[in-house]
Amino acid sequence: MIALDTNVIVRLLTHDDPPQLAAIGRFFDAHPEETFLVPDLVLAEAVWTLRTTFRWERLQIAAAIRRLAAKPDVGFADQDQVMAALRTMEAGGDFADELVVARARADGCMALATFDTALQGRHPAFVIKPK
Image (cartoon, rainbow, N blue to C red):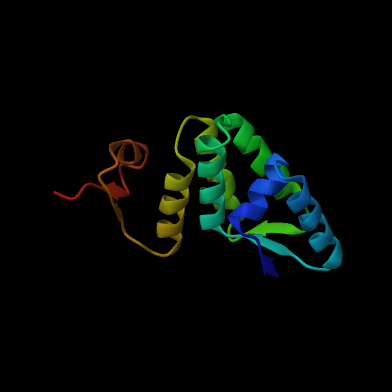
């Protein structure tokens, strides 16, 4: 398995740099039996980059990540967590926040401490505000 960094994911989704996109294609072709991992942090960075630098809308980003997820040689640490975070983003929530909550739960945490009131509103039984 080979992990992919944010800049590779952004090139794949935006096609904004033809020479780098071609290099990625050659890299994939050179590793035909390999599986490629997109780490959670890379996804969060990619979503942020697509929103802030490329000004993509939430639904456009979600559709692009779903296309990436459909590739048989690309995987995520936890596909279900990524899909849940995408659904939340499509509904107006924050992708990275949902991955943080999902990861904390999966890691056995009893709660997530944050000052983010929107996140607390979406997960009132899990998210607590420090007082």
